[in-house]
Picture 1: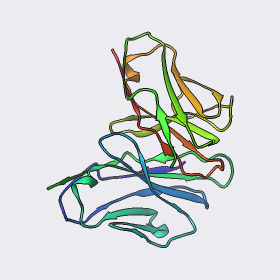
Picture 2: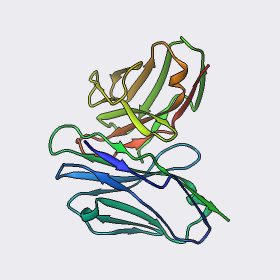
Picture 3: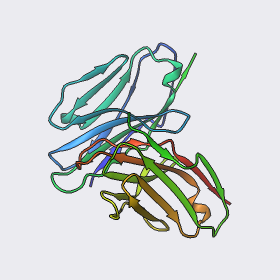
Length: 116
Length: 113
């Protein structure tokens, strides 16, 4: 069975601090995909990134960076110099399977509060 | 840009009512999904559809049904709403292959009194 664990329920930081959101996954599949979504107070889930299991290169996009480590089954998300607009719930998700239709399995989310 | 819209942002219904939640996507996506989101539980898949008139049960289909008569529209139906179906409902779509990224609508917050 597939599982995604986001152990941090809520994180509070002050603007300009760096913050890392943890994501640990479990799967027996050799081919799988990992995702991060952001859910601002408006409610809509916004897609941030997708990585496949064969690409362990770290990714940087502006203030966002992602660290994928298969050895520890982790796909952590770091926001550098956080801003108030980063306040949201962040979800890590996994889809996998060498055959058949792939469904997304979500973690329970981490609420990030960035105060001025 | 992918556009997924849901018919209502907020909805209040009474126990026993039949409730329809509508979702429309404008990107000719093959796959559509309905999730519910509850505090501490994340998102859970209710039903999905990979083609017109096709549907598959997700992880929590009990108490729900779906309809997909046209490619762009996927409806979630609560035959007889109950208070434990008070939740945020999110619709998503994805292009065509089984590994594609899902894109979400704004959500409908349903309250059943």
